[in-house]
Image 1 (cartoon, helix red, strand yellow):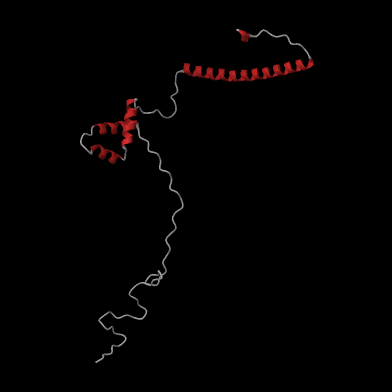
Image 2 (image 1 turned 90 degrees about the vertical axis):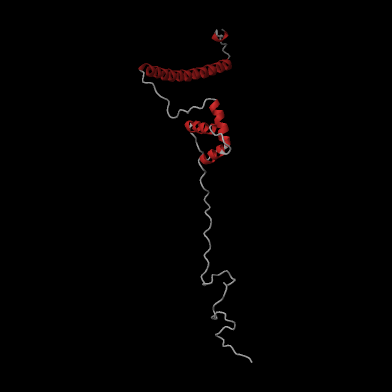
Length: 169
């Protein structure tokens, strides 16, 4: 005996399907809802800025060296370095610097003296330097003129009397 199953019923208790439904997504890459997939945004071509070099103060270096020297148990030094984000090479360099006298570097302008005698001497020094530059320019001009006069005298056949020079002293 053959039983006929109507087309809208499933034979083995499977859920009923409509003609346009599928159990899996279409293989063309589309979504099961029929929406088009949006392409991912292109990567940002901008290169990230360079990370600024870390600068450690002398006080910080000395504090870390003090704490590192106090580490006695195994793993304690490594934990300190990881916590502070440092490398063992930092400790080696800083210990070398400490042996050579690790002191904070002075920054900024050099201090100026408020002593009036120092200010007077500085003004005199500046005036003498200016006068020295002026005299050097005059000397250069005079040497150029003398060299030109020597060439003219030799072309005209005029003998020059040698002057006693101070350079033989």
